[in-house]
Image (cartoon, rainbow, N blue to C red; front, side, top):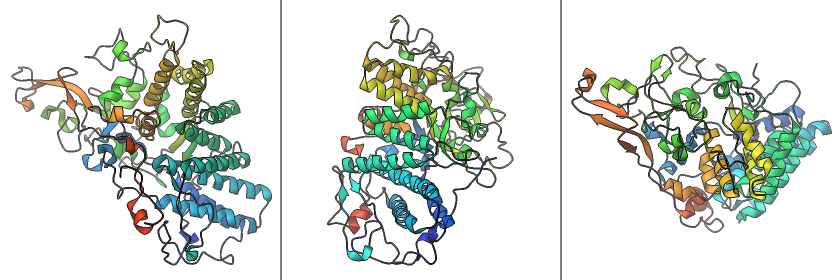
Length: 545
């Protein structure tokens, strides 16, 4: 049974209201709860730390529309960034700094709370993890940001300025180290959603990789691997990979850190939002670029494949393609999906209503067949996975190849992921095979593609990957396409509803989409305008905005 232990509302930490001309973190209360009313017991401290778990990401799958992986079939839900529009009025960091302030407050109060040193260490380690995570996310998005590691005295008129992100990176690495030192390998009892030593190492490795600190990324990911605490779901390739994205996989050894759900007590609507295949509600629609990224079953990119048939594009492909993409002719929840832009295709056809698929494809990864769409409105208790072991393996593979060209350990790590879905292993010994990587660049590109297909439509990783690899301008300014189709008029075997028109898929012209846009300065997002307006003498805007 899942436990839900970190869903405690903790607005209690703050009350009242005050103002300060120097306040870049919105307006904070004049009075904290006093020592007499809070911070007296271990339970008080645990409640404060529990609140920090609310900063972990959920509902971040939509971020894939901010890359070349997908567009939003629910047209009104597509944000400005997905269109290549970056506005200072759209960004916000208030929530992050609220949480940082709570973390700083908790660290300052913990010494006065009566508890064992072991408990104090466990609580402080969790706080260090979340402060590090929050700053990691802030500098990834904004670059230089204000750094605060104390509870500000807002009456003092202290102004806060942006700190060089490199300095913040050093500080957050220190926080990760403190978290790693104090956290357990595993908490007592079942997996209950709390951060562990492995989660802290994995998160540290994630951001080290983003900032090209390959030594740290390799070292920390290797420590997670060597711990023996995690393994890939269905590592023996028994055909259960698709279950990884259903509720039945919750709590498995691949999930290093998750936000826990448990329907009906705590539920979310991911299925309905991502894809309502029986109603044609578009959700997140894979682009043709993503579909084409999946290799053939022999391990060849489709542009070099000898077995790929563009008229039967889902035959002889990497099995993860079928797990990820719902396409024409598949049956889901008792209904066959049809995507032709014709009346006979029903609600699921291209352009049949405003929320139908924009690309000719639907998202399939989260469509759990154990959930009856006719009963509870598609409510899900699926845990939201923040980090899984496959990410650690790919982090290690990428970092090792960057440190030493064609390092065998890089091959070994990426091939674990390929083996569990039956894909042939990448190798450097036989040039006659399509899996051959004879240079650092060739292995680099195969690892990058592995990132894309393994984590497609999952957690928005592609959005950040294309930035750290320096290819965002190339891929986001390229045309976006859906599938190919052509209409044949006067066809004698056309459905009567289509008035003599027949659609042939995977031939003809490709659907051209609106696409996105990217300029060099979009590597960093604009500093929130509301914060600059409050602090015109201390906060500057990122270049280009």
